[in-house]
Length: 543
Image (tube, rainbow, N blue to C red; front, side, top):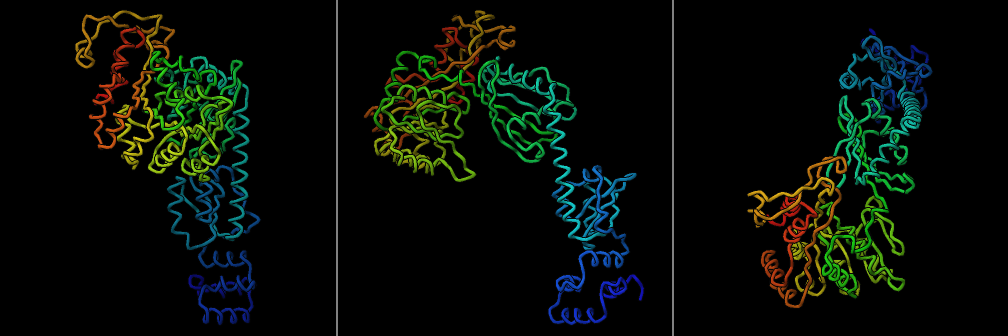
């Protein structure tokens, strides 16, 4: 019988791994139970995995490699990631002249070698080895490789130049009062941008080859896995910069050019807890203070992401944070630590959700409850229940203006009569940039601005021309514009008629509610902001 057709049992006898009697017993078992002869012999512990792989190699005319010789090179391991190596039961051994020598454990996987060739870019030359030995070697050597890579990256990322470079970038961000820092790798390029006053601007980037080391340094500080570059990660860094403790929220995502990292800066010094610093007029301050001191009900602050809703809520809490008042917040995430207030962070991975926390929160005997965001019908319903049972509930919602908040709550399944019984006040807000005082100049409204905003062409406004103090943007800092809707019995009665947003807006205007756009125009006339900012900040309201 030729080798091409030689049976596995005959080969094992030739190798001295099996006797004829043992073969007959195994063949009898195979006839009764079915299955592969090699697996039967392994199960009965007549042969070893090593002996079976040697026999399979001879049968398939492949080179066989003993377990003791499974020693891959670092270059070869780079050709195939650990997950693929485990999936294929394959161990890359060496790379020479464009050929990847690789050990496989099962000849049936030979058709899959084309996939490995595509992944590695090399012609694959297979050898056969024990499946068990390959699996153990994959775990051993890839773990060793990952550890070595991690240690090397940590060493580089902890080097003095990288440490100083990152510290310089972070310190600049703090001094510029930036809200976010973006580290963006591209092929052959590395860009760093900062967001200040709601606008991104680019800073001089370091050389592209330092991108990996810089990102690794950030991940080390945030206690993230620096060897994991294929999955998004989130972390937190607590540093003292320029004599102040700064909290950084870290988010990483894989991209085509490498890992993109965004740092959110949370500087306790920038937390505004006094209503007088929010840009409110005296009457508006009084309204909000009155909202915060209601014994029960719901007060909603609305606006898009980044419009300052959390700051307004924290300022309201500050008004009522007394020793005789129990305040509990549930936030996603907790942005700032507030003294004297119980703050609970959301963690959906362990089922700590708004819904689960709110139900537990009501058993903690609170007077005031802050819900970070009402985002679903269940949260809305629990907030209403809390208000009906004698609690003051403060929360946020994503709507364009104050009147549309009512219809949004109805859309979330809250009955109109329950809204009438619970809603005490709604605050819509936007952030607009302030004119840079160093380069401000008088300007007149354009024809288009006159049409959009109903202002007179002869009126004088102000606009920054751009200077070093404002990074040549014409703006320094931001302030808020507010639209405050205070409920009264007549307005609440409208809720029961399932009114449209337009109808509610008309009723609110009759009660002297100033719209976001009207308030923005007032600030533009005062020289605080520009007409461009007013239009940009209130487009959604007018659409």
